[in-house]
Image (tube, rainbow, N blue to C red):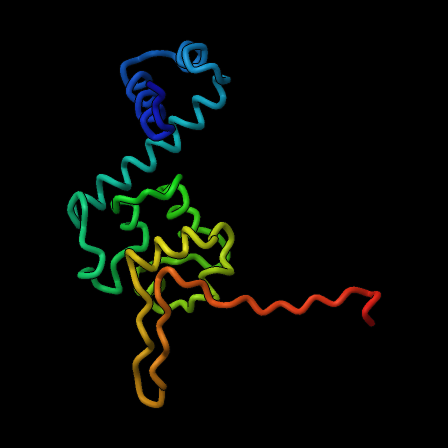
Length: 165
């Protein structure tokens, strides 16, 4: 039975913690020792962060009941069928305009979320299912229309080739 990447990576980390050298693990896994070192570093970081989040929010927190100030990466603790869920959550925490809190995710428009690198229809639907958008509140703000988590806003692209000009 084939193992998933997260299972493989945890196994690699366990072997390393037991004192097995990266070169030996690399031979077992059919990858380079440098790749084993990368996997160990990344897996360790993720596992340490998950432990901190689990201690504060529980193993499977109810995201809907967490405050807007909760860190965005608490979504790593959600059960998701999306391939590479943890990596995708982590990538949205980084970059030029990172999502730092659940409030950031709740307030970002559907179009802005879909414009983020790596966010396609499936990830968009999963993020909105776990953490729906909230309409902005405050004086003078009109209530925003909230789309279904499964609906993607219509794309409005007008391509004009140089021949059409």
